[in-house]
Every structure is written in C-alpha cells, then in structure tokens.
Length: 329
Ligand code: UFG
Image (cartoon, rainbow, N blue to C red; front, side, top):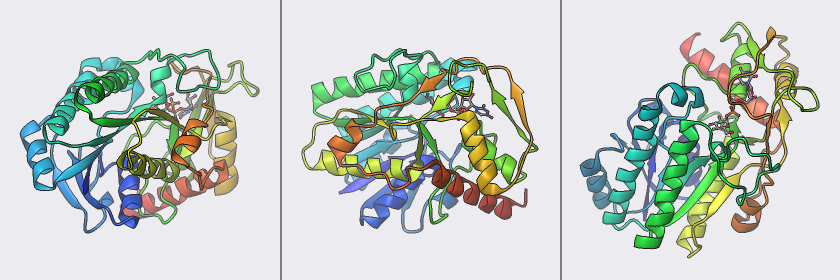
C-alpha cells in the first residue's frame, strides 16, 4: 500500500510526510514545486515533479506505485489572491482536483483525504462552528474548495471512493524537530508574519482592525499546530483503511486567540519588541471563527500534542530563525 501526497513538498503536506515516515508508510510526493521545495521532501521519499492537471502522468504514477490512497494538499491558498484571480483559483483548486479525482477513480484508488478549509463557512453567525454549520463561502478560495467537497461526496456515492474532508482552521507553527515549516515567501498569515518581524526578516507588522466586537477589538481565530494537523491526516488514513466511512471533520482545537494575544505571545517568547501599527480592517475578515473541535477527537481519537499558543509560537520562531540562517536574509 502506497500513499500519493500531492503538495507534499509544501508546508502542511511535508508535515504529513514526516509523520507517515514514522509509521513506515510507502510514500510518493507529487508536486509542481510552484510553492513547495524539494529540500522539504525527506530522503528516501519519491518525488514526482508534475501538475495535478496532467492526467496521463497521474494515471501512470498511480499504476506504477500501486497507490491505494491519496492525500490531496496541492492548491493555491491565499484568500485575497483568489479575489483578484478567481478563474486561476477555480482552475487550480477545482478543475485540476476533478482531474485528480477522475484519475483516482479510474486507477482504483480506494481512499482520498482532502485539504479543505474553514473558509467554506464564510461569515457564519453560528459560533463555535460545527461540521453541521451551513457552508456559505464568501471568497473564490472557499468556493473553489467547497466544490471539490461536493465532487468527492458525489464520487463517493457513485464510484465508492472513500473520501475524508478535513476543514483546516488557522494552521501555524513548524515541526518540533525543525525538519519542516512554512517556507513560502511573501507570507500573509499572522503567526508567520509576526515571526518574521521578531527575527528581523521584516521591519514590523500591522494589526488589521482594532474595532471588532471582540474582548480586545481584534479578530479571534482557532490556531492549530501543523504537526497536530498532520497527525489528524495519518489518523484519517487509518480510519479509512480500517473501513471507516468518509465524512467532514473540522481540524481545530476548539478555542481561539485574538490578534493582539498572538502578537504579545510572539514578543514575549522572542524577547523582541518589534514595531506594530494599527491599521484598518482587512476586507473579508470575520471577527471570530472558532470550532468546537469535538468530532475530530471522538471520531479519530485525535489527541493534540501542541495545543498551546506558546508552543506554536516557539516552533514558528525556531523555524523562522532556521530560514534566516539558511538564506542569510
Ligand atoms: N492579521 C493581522 N496582521 C497580519 C496578518 C493577519 O492583523 O499581518 C490578522 C487578520 O486580519 C486576521 C487574523 O490576523 O484577523 C488571521 O489572519 P490570517 O491571514 O493568519 O488567517 P485568516 O484567518 O485570514 O485565514 C485562515 C487561513 C485561510 C482560510 C481562513 C478561513 O489562512 O486559508 O483562515 O477562515 F481560508
């Protein structure tokens, strides 16, 4: 049994590969290296450089390696970019996912794990969010992912492809052993940005909006450590292979932190008082998005190991320092 990990040279995919390696799994990474890096793929893991829109290549890889499961991470993930280039997002995230699903079905792949997102909930009023909260995405990014969820649900019914849909909340941190982390340039995510400011890789940062109806006026998010998220994928794979029926699962701890709390934590742990400016709200930011985090625990037996903002920030800072040393920037 071999698993194909699309986007396995990227941030979250590479963490799943690390976790899978410890279980002795045979792994093939499939990545176009547009935002991933070959040096994030551990030695001994096969890397196929390719586009998930290339069905002939996918079919060959599935047959040659006797792939029984696919974890599909490869996607474009920047919400504001999806607003300015919706068709690019629908091509990459939706159309090409359809090609991948078709290659999977035709190649006899049994199990499929899909990286979805809390962005499918949009500006939901219901808080905390459960898997039953109605999806109402407001960005092309969220819509591009929700359409894939629907394709998978239909493909499961029609062809028996067993699909687990994992909706990620705010993923952050890095491998505790320092083997991987977020390396993409021009990052926009809060913890990554703050870690760059703390390590001198950027001059400072902004808080986008301080007048929200939250206790300190800044937005609240449910931050999840990338290694805990990776473990959820490994458990999902075990669950599917042992006969569990695919479903939708929110990947989150079940509690939130505000932007100010995050920045204060980064300053406390790094000991660096970097400049922070108070700016206008960023369009499309919901004030709060937090999940219950119950289903992931009850269905998969998931027990997070890094459920503490200090830990997430400590690992994010260590990784940022590593990148700085590596590139001298
Ligand atoms: N923020 C700042 N300053 C920054 C960066 C972010 O104040 O420099 C704020 C944002 O305005 C927001 C919060 O920090 O209030 C979190 O922002 P992120 O960009 O880190 O994350 P988002 O919540 O916008 O996005 C995340 C994922 C998306 C996913 C979305 C679903 O990164 O992929 O959650 O809600 F679609």
